[in-house]
Image 1 (cartoon, one colour):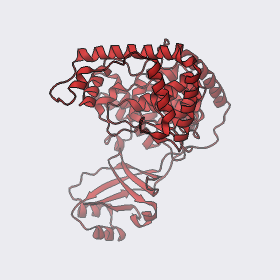
Image 2: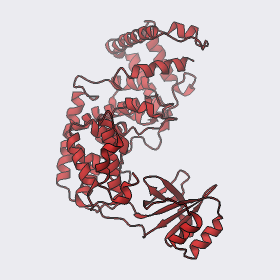
Image 3: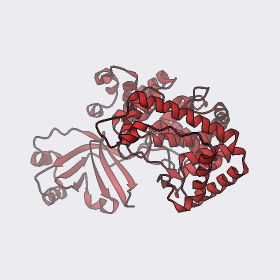
Image 4: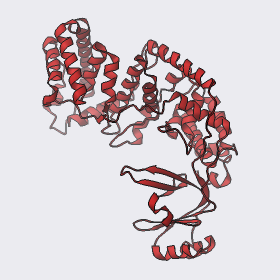
Length: 483
């Protein structure tokens, strides 16, 4: 009950305040950090200007075709007809006489799944039907222009008009992808391989005695009583009663004041004592050895040891959200981005910030009702003198041959970020040009349309799909009827 009450009150308070605290510059990074980052971006931009495009980027394999979901027919019989080179027209008559299946864009991608299996995925776009076939079974499933796949209660059959082909992206789009790869180091990951999911801090862990001693020492020295929600404790098993909003507001105010007092005490007094320094140093070495940390301890390390050491602890900890309203993964990434900015670690900073912008985090559940509270913070990138439009296109376009660990953005979130950009009108015009560009492959033109759709959805209070029909009609006819 205590947790239920807390999250209800937390959800109510979220709508009334910004997600992260801002500095005096109205950004989530300090002026000193912004200044440092601007220097790095200046060097990166100069490096990019002198850099020639050394490889051609190509689209993901794609073609046109049809997808059929067949029920009530034997897999072996369907396969036998495909092996006998049945025509598309005869196949329709025999297996799907009332079909309204229309011509679609069909894409093919290859990847390794969680079980370390090599997979070929064939998808009817926009993500309508798909099949996943192990690479070793591909030849058995691919019969000329037909691809057959047996599922539990049906058989999926794809008819492709031509072989899957990649298309070379025009120079200007390849240059955008190159700019993204110039800024976002593809060899850097936020969390190293040894990072573990967040398990929390427990005083019962005997391997963390130094941290326990540190916390006990702080509590002993700082004797101001921590505020509690008395009624919540007294009635936490009474499901008919809840903490009133007035009580919670008072508790929040008291707790904030208590935190300020404790922080000032640590800064002005305790941090200067040799015993505190020794305990903190021992606790840090212990945390690294055990690969175990927590927010409070990382705050102590950042303030009284070094930001680099605090960053190391945070990167070794993967925070997973417990529910849609759990903001801890975003706060964790924000702290990583702040510490990276302040310790001059550009590659970690940019990936962490882009994860915040794209809301790329693990959660047990994620209801759409919580999305509106998660801002994109694109203005923080704009003040760094990044060519934000090129970066946006560079992480939004999909190619078959990116650098390993290339950063791909979420079309939904990037569309929202554009809506919050100071250059939204310029970017909107460029996206429209991309949608109607016949030299760009159809799959990326479709993605450009969805980017535009998400932009307009976030800009228009009374958004209506019909309002963007003229833009949709810029796509090839067979695509415009699908999106």
